[in-house]
Image 1: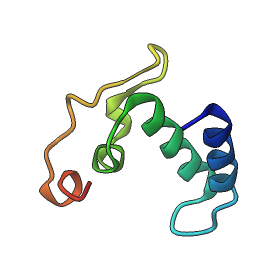
Image 2: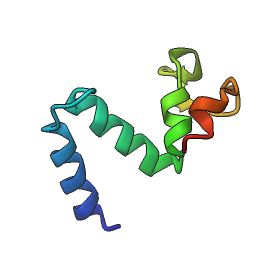
Image 3: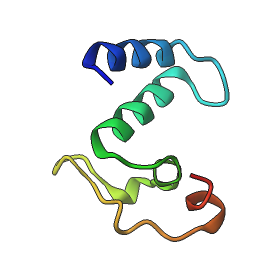
Amino acid sequence: MTSDELQRLIRTAESYNGVFDGHTMAAAIALGFVTGARRGELCALRWSNVGLEARVVDFRTLERSDDVLDAA
């Protein structure tokens, strides 16, 4: 995927009106793209996995939930 295609995908996601608001969907797409995280990993994220000041997301500490992680 080129950077132009990613930008177009994120702009499209921002206009999404579904279960999640568009900005949430765009953020999930961008985070998944830059980290390589799977859908289940993104859905299982909690604020306790995010270090805003350190600018890190810790996927290693995700609690195993078969219904979320295996859905990816």
